[in-house]
Image (cartoon, rainbow, N blue to C red; front, side, top):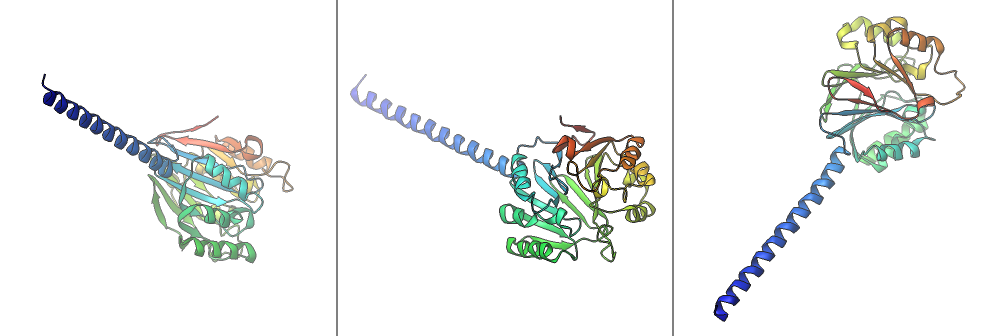
Amino acid sequence: MTDRTAAGRSVRIRKHRRAIGTIAAAVLLLSVLAAWVYGRVTGGIPAGEAHFYFFDVGQADAAAVITRDGCILIDAGSNISEDRLYFMLEKAGVKRIDLAVLSHPHEDHIGGADLLLENFEVTEIIMPSYGSDELTYRRLCNAAERSGAATVTAYEGLCRAVGGVSVTVLSAFSESSDENDASTVIRVSFGDTSAIFTGDAGVATEQKIIKKYPADTLGCDILKVGHHGSPSATCDEWATMLHPQYAVVSCARMNDYGHPNYAVLRRLRGAGATICRTDTDGTILLISDGKSVTLNK
């Protein structure tokens, strides 16, 4: 072998090694980028699943529906639970909130919203139209304006689609003199499964919805029980028509209101529901594969 031939082969080997090194570096960079995007967009949720979280925020309400492509927040807890809710959302893998639905302007449902708006990218908020708790409501409105999130006042028939999940507003009685009954009630669907979130809506709102919608629209796999399990909500006809597989009560241990009410729990069990409670079970995770819902234990 001549020196020139050996030198040429050495150059080719070096070029080959550099090419391999360049390809390996590119693959590594793409892998890191893909992992970052996956974590940013999906939070690690498997394809084909929707995770329904009901967070333990004491005597308050906060829930989220998360898929690999999006996150929907339903209510935001209270002022005193806002830090805990923020960390629970992070633990659930949430990197951004595509849609926030705030059912009504009571502190135990919107108190933590301003902190979340300051710490998460929020795309859109479905807002209550007014608030008697002026300080908390004003903080929410100011935080929403600073965040740049699009805002829309809830109205019946409003629909949104986020990450394979559809949201439909069944009721938004802004003219109601009772802020609980003015709660925005939504139906959340993923594949053949669905959940109904009621805020603090009571029997008057339930009856209006029952008269307006057919049974197949109201039947659901998951019911977020109205008003923390208060006897002011969840009438017999409501429990029977919805016939949920799981009924979730969000309330605090040994609260001053006696929530959840025993008659409400008996009614739901009679309708075939498995009862889940944040006061005794902590944060609850229900997982849908689009065909059925299971409780994560």
